[in-house]
Image (cartoon, rainbow, N blue to C red; front, side, top):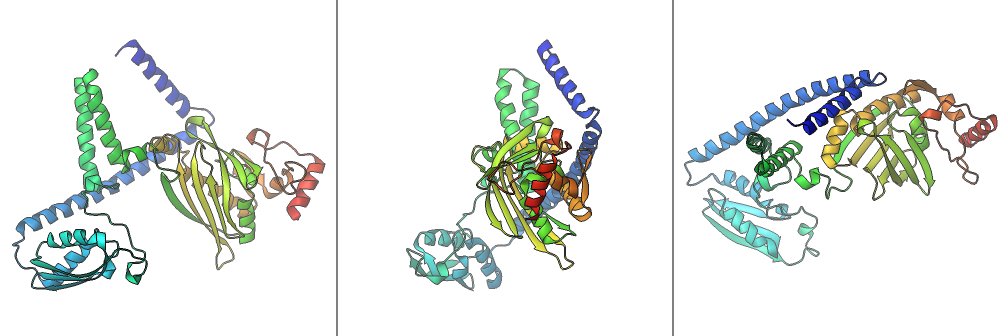
Length: 422
């Protein structure tokens, strides 16, 4: 190892130690890391079980095909085999009727012209089929045929390796192949080892993420690279919960993982959220849909550091509380690599949402919560609202954390209180 590598390694170790042993947040970060390790171990254990079952089932299928005596198959079993196959070759499989008699198959019903060759080929290739008769009605267009309305796109029978999502067995085999390439590159070293190392790393990342390589890197994924959904229940009237989520400028004072929200006018808002390794991320978002006391939908604008699509749906509970369904899709910088770093450091949206919704629940149910080590009450939130500018009644702007506890002027409190009451 040369001096440059030693220096880079020393700097990296120093940065990690500074991050973990930070006197203010080091204890929290270590706890997050410990929980991540436990969670990852549990997920790995489940993944091993799923993969073992998948491999076992595939092996049983191969053995069953090898032991199959061939020849004639029961008509009902053959019909089921055909039905399971044709859905990959026609867009409206429900419109096709299948009649089987002693291995001879008759197909009838409406079908699009360009799908006839594919379905006949698939049926003839089905084990047990002796002959195929086509009684299908070919249509060039589907507009005037009720049975051909809607439908799913044709997928064809593609090998697992060519699909976007892989089975557990395929992921394991590809991951092992990638690990072998990386290991060989490390043993060989030199310039010639760069290509197999890169190829091995690509295979490993493809197997781990179960996403196409370009999509995993954030290329062509749009705003929907990572998706998740969470449901919460809060013992507070739906009108109060709605008002809190509608007033986005209030979020930084109650949510630790929202640093700033500015109302830019015309349903546009500027958001600042904490990112991994202490970096702040900013983006502008548009409120694209609003249904009073029921639904809010946000979308980040093109060119933002983070691609965000978020919907908040509110429904009353029988007990007089509120059920909150939150769906979030986001595209972090550097794709899944950026998401992995955020997940390891506890700054990913899933982790942040769980923590912040616990604060929101406390705030709306008890009238107080603790944010960044400071207590915030409902009265303080109302008192610290100040108008953004004249001519925008009710519009407010929240100060950042460093000014969150500064006392407001008496006149400002009065104006903000009157606006809130209206």
